[in-house]
Image 1 (cartoon, rainbow, N blue to C red):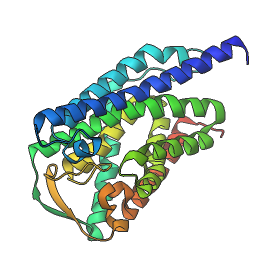
Image 2 (image 1 turned 135 degrees about the horizontal axis):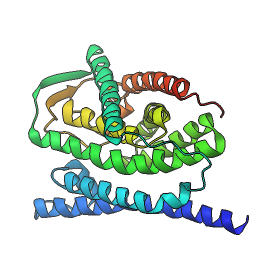
Image 3 (image 1 turned 90 degrees about the vertical axis):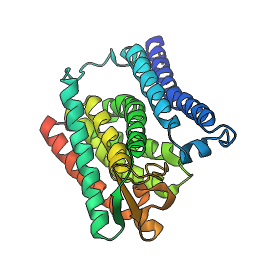
Length: 289
């Protein structure tokens, strides 16, 4: 390996490690805010923070998203500047909205499927606090995780190995990264299949990160902030816009992990993700892998 390749590899490792940092820092912020909000009650643990997400999750999400954007803007150029072909710039706001529409649409469809199967039961309106918790869940993960996994990992894998292996490897890594959510293997498998296909598929529409941020934000926000279901292990005790009850076995409801570990939800999103991916690949005329 020559000096130039060593330097480029070092830049990649540095960017990835730096983009992991906001996730850890946000957890510290969330735990600290939770302890200040519930003095004498809150335990200084991530578990307590995740079970009592308001208002700590909102502060954590703002810190996480802000740091991730700063790091990506500061250090990503040295990683991608040597690419022979980079996607042209696009309309950021339009792509964000397109991502929100796609993400919100697929979660709404999956919720309808759960309702038809008798798993999802709306109980009435939820709370403004729940809507804000859902918003925070979408903001933090939507920005930080997408900058890392689609903004760096998928883009690098695609440049090196083509479409198929890039999607497979990114999906596997993205799924395993969710193992920290209640140590749920079911959620990991659900994320690998559903989110892997859908979010990676969305990226190929533009090969830019904005549409992915919008889609991931909408995924979490609609799941928790609108429909009131658990988001990656974060319980929505007060609901979102809607309060709900999930009825059935863990296989159908996802248990403590929420719908991301539920079979009907995973199948629905995976099918839509496959369609999105095929349309995206045809649209941008990508081949290989």
